[in-house]
Amino acid sequence: MKQIICLEPGKFEQREVTRPVAEPGKVILKVKRIGICGTDLHAFEGTQPFFTYPRVLGHELACEIAEGQGPEINFKAGHPVTFIPYFPCNNCIACRNGKPNCCTKIQGAGVHIDGGMTEFIQVPAYSLIDGEGLTSDELAMVEPMAIGAHAVRITEIQKDEYVLIIGAGPIGLGVMAFAKVNGARVIAMDVNNTRLEFAQKYFGVDHLINALENPVEQIAKITGNEMVTAVIDATGNKRAIEGSLEFLAHGGRITLVGIQKESFCFSHPEFHKRETTLRSSRNATREDFNQVVTNIRNGNVNVSALISHRITLHSVPDQFPLLLDPQKGVIKAIIELD
Ligand SMILES: NC(=O)c1ccc[n+]([C@@H]2O[C@H](COP(=O)([O-])OP(=O)(O)OC[C@H]3O[C@@H](n4cnc5c(N)ncnc54)[C@H](O)[C@@H]3O)[C@@H](O)[C@H]2O)c1
Ligand SMILES: [Zn+2]
Ligand SMILES: [Zn+2]
Image (tube, rainbow, N blue to C red):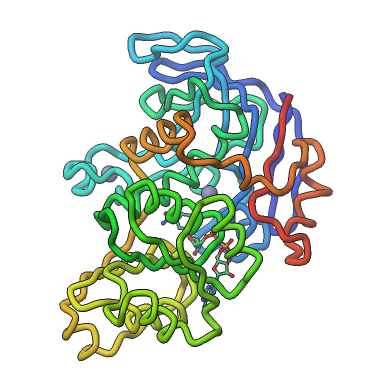
């Protein structure tokens, strides 16, 4: 079978490898689509910390069952599935407390272990998610959308509350989609007007704010001077994170989905007087994946619009570097297999 391997930063190579054979408790999946995300782009650029090479990238997969037997495998060959691409140890304190998404020894497909840029992949049967009723394009969007669904769930976003979501990239759009599913009044903020308009057109957000145009005054106006009761950062931008507190109502909460490498700083009196709740949101759990599949299946969330660019597996060495060009206006690129 064919596989694309990232040998070192800036270098992909196609190679021919033996197709995996199912081990007990594992299943072989035929890969149909691979969504490309920031993690893959940074790994290719060499800017992903703690990344080791060579590595097969890709963790946003649409697949179908190829082979696998055992009591835990409920699907027949050809059944559409995706899988939770972060494998927990099931033993550490986070796993024991029902938080496998932040396991201390988590193994991410396409990050710590080889991932999905391959024709067939072997995964643990317990990681499978039923994709019945979803197209391959939709199934490849489940993982990035689950990141947003998780952030919304743990932030306990309520009907009618004002939520500010900063960053309208694929991750922020997922947060917006699920904040709307919860019935919140969603304010989308970015510095890119094209992305803001996209958020309104496809994810029905209520208000758009360009972060460069007096955002505090704009939010005060929208909320009748009360400000928002929740801010979710999906930029991974230090300045955006540090600025988020000024938009927050007293008693409000801030959730950081975006990630950056530096420390960040809040004014302690400003943080204190609001009795601010601050938390991060990492990965997603089975509950989030299932919520995403259900909402795509019943038409509440339209994810196909996210796909702006398509390439084939064998064209990855030539075409992948072009996706890094900001002029291309990529929202989500996917790799198609037959
Ligand atoms: N929580 C998780 O497990 C998880 C998973 C995947 C990705 N992420 C992180 O989520 C973040 C977003 O990912 P993405 O793929 O959507 O990225 P992206 O780069 O496509 O989108 C980020 C958006 O933020 C906007 N932005 C940047 N600085 C801003 C500022 N100061 N004010 C307002 N808007 C600003 C950009 O214009 C862009 O539209 C990244 O930090 C990524 O590492 C987290
Ligand atoms: Zn991703
Ligand atoms: Zn663990």
